[in-house]
Image 1 (cartoon, rainbow, N blue to C red):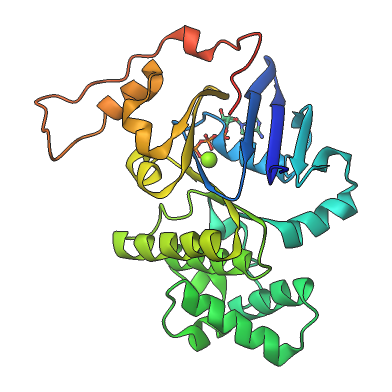
Image 2 (image 1 turned 120 degrees about the vertical axis):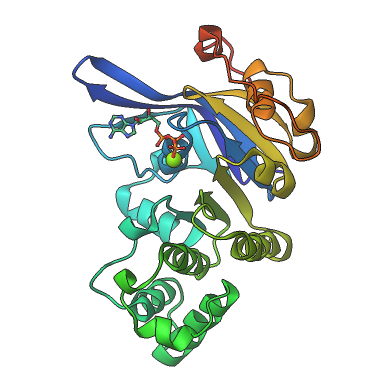
Length: 285
Ligand SMILES: Nc1ncnc2c1ncn2[C@@H]1O[C@H](COP(=O)(O)OP(=O)(O)OP(=O)(O)O)[C@@H](O)[C@H]1O
Ligand SMILES: [Mg+2]
């Protein structure tokens, strides 16, 4: 069976005054119809990996890879017009900061309706009905009022849920969710995770879930990639995350507070320059 997504030797580079900066360095992984978590500290290349898959890295940033295959088709061979169809229909991404993704001069309703009509050529009434359903699916009460509001009238957490609603309207094969729940309170976070979970179960959607939160990822995902300095340093089954071997992963786990085993002093993560080295044959997920 072909994988839903197959990424081989992905590099993302940015020219800087002091030379090339490699934000992502030889990342390879495969994804089936499952929930894959990507964790790692700030700046480790999680968002750039997600954006590179959708070919959303703007010049002068550069993307290189042996291939990025969606259902066996190499996305790197597609024209920009073909990529727009992929982004509109087959892969959706919930960006880390939804404020930059919503159009400030259109109402929420207009944007949701537009997202639906781009995907399915349904009439206005059908699109409106579907938009309200999706808002309700992400636990927005008072969906009618929200439809008439502009993005600046929404709180950060509402903005994030509206983005998720918008990304789910086209019924994508793959959803890349970049810190989708970090601005939400715990109860809404749980609801949003349930919605995404249901889509994976019911529709066979693949999910890449990018997060800082090791515990959340361990509970919610099937598999986890741990990134450090632009590389995948370890891949493991989510339920075995606590048995992870790599010293960086162990360090991250040990620097989390635990209510069941309180420590006098939390460990401080000690970094080893060797973790950032690219081996000649990269580990493959
Ligand atoms: N336009 C750019 N020019 C130069 N460097 C960039 C650019 N965009 C991102 N980077 C660098 O690429 C690296 C990876 O960034 P990325 O956004 O993927 O990190 P991240 O793992 O998502 O972090 P966070 O958890 O804070 O969201 C960072 O060091 C960042 O400074
Ligand atoms: Mg990020």
